[in-house]
Image (tube, protein in one colour):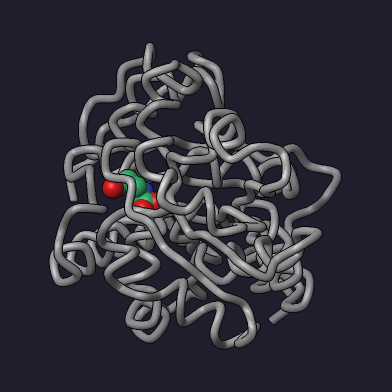
Length: 271
Ligand code: DGL
């Protein structure tokens, strides 16, 4: 029994996203859990999820989990907000290992801001449509006023590496202008790509608005789970990361370069 637990501790944590934006989540996980091993799967062949129907996103998310389970994981993280919004409950039921999503950690991060009376969630169209963030806030803070905005043009801008360009700021401004007069306290970045554009969001929203995302909260939740179950890897060890993708990932990808350095190599897999 003890031997089995020791084997389980050394297993990796699977992290998947529709593409490379989830590397922002992986970075937060690795910062807090540098001794753990991760396998990251970017479903770049099917990106974006954020414009697709719940049925299709659930099907793709199911395939990602199925693939990751081949590597004998001890936990799976859905780094993608859209996939969390549409498939977390179902995947938790069917997966043999625990599955963590990004919506609740995002909600907690928003509620920890100095002021969190009125919260704006910026996300993909599918995430907004799912109402998952509204439900998440209603469960833990029924008094918070939560508004949502879909920002479909931001994923391609982040993919192109236009993190702080004037064009990006103009487009963010286009999406957020209707909310600027509404005394927003917090803007929650409810899409994996948006943390890369955080400075542009801050420039548009001004210093009174806290711009947050749930990466760190998710890492804390995962850490607490691993400690509670006695599944943490040896803290004296240095963990590693294997990168998988469903289509070729250029080593020049601006997202990869910005979050992990261009030395990271992706292995192509077929789901
Ligand atoms: N990963 C997605 C999310 O966090 C954004 C990219 C996409 O639309 O697939 O919602």
